Image (cartoon, rainbow, N blue to C red; front, side, top):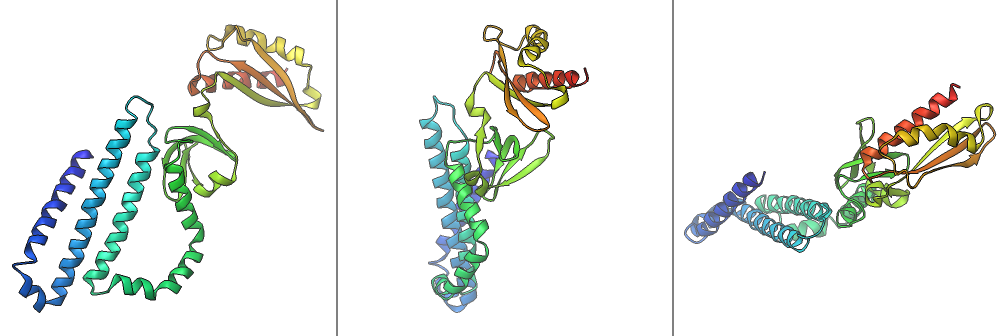
Length: 280
């Protein structure tokens, strides 16, 4: 990937130098052929902007990585800079095409003000999603690889785009969550908590409900035999809620590590024991 980007950068530099050097000796030809001149100016605009964007992207990423060399570097900033660079390149491609077609970009933008306002209203949701995406990328609240819970969705962040978060859930499905939802729904970053404590909630029908003390005795053998648990901390069973048809319990237990894998294994074993208890 780095090699291909370097080759692309070198090619753009060479083309820019050759094109710039051609303006003086080929000035008469450019004057006679306006179409060729417009194409040359358009290409020159794109190459100049693209090279400057690439240089800026490289410098900012290098500075960020060097300043955070001794720390755990989260990839949001680099991802955000890359997305901004992509948007910048697309913008200058459009400007360059206008110049190549003989259209003055300034006059075009001025004449399209009303249309642009209408487009902004029509695509308001997408635009706000893009802005939210940039805010997320430049924040340190979470990053690619973190496990999050937002609304009814939970899983591992595999990508952050200008439109949405891509989350891989427990069923290995890719869930697209709009960036705006991050700022309107409750979000829990399970990775950043780095806690050894697990809280497992479950429900029992009224006719199968039992006292907390009996549940503690029922779970005790499981917890004593599980090597992933911190036995010195013990465990607690509590009643979380009482409804008409069921009683909601919660089990609080501490593990020897904050590893997500261990947490999932412990939670799975507890819930499996609950299912067996229901069959008693």
